[in-house]
Image: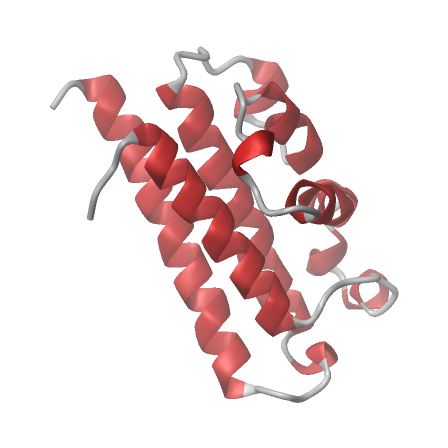
Length: 144
C-alpha cells in the first residue's frame, strides 16, 4: 500500500471511529433530548464528517492546502469533492451544510453556544453520517 493510500484510509478509519463514539453516546440517551449529549455528540459528529470528506479529497488527488487541510468548513469541503453530492440521499448534502456553521464556528466547544444550535436528533444524525461514510468508502473502493 502506498503512503497516499494509507493516509486516506487512515483518515476514513478515524472518521468511522468518531462516528462510533457518537453512536455510543446516542445509545446512552436514546429518546432523550439531545441537550444531554449535545456537546460531545456533535463534536464527534462534526469531526467524523470532516475527516470523511478529507479522506475523499485525498483519494481524489487533492493536495492538502491550507484552505482545506486545516478547514472545519464542512460545506466547503463537501463542495470541493468530485461528485460526492450526487451519491448522497436527497437532503443529505443540505444537512451537512446546515451542520457546517456550527462545526466551523466551534459551537459545541462552548455550552452557552451549543444550547442555541438548531440541530437534528442524534439518531437521525448518526444515520446521516453513516450514510456519508458508506458512500465515501464506496467511492474510494474500500471494502471492509
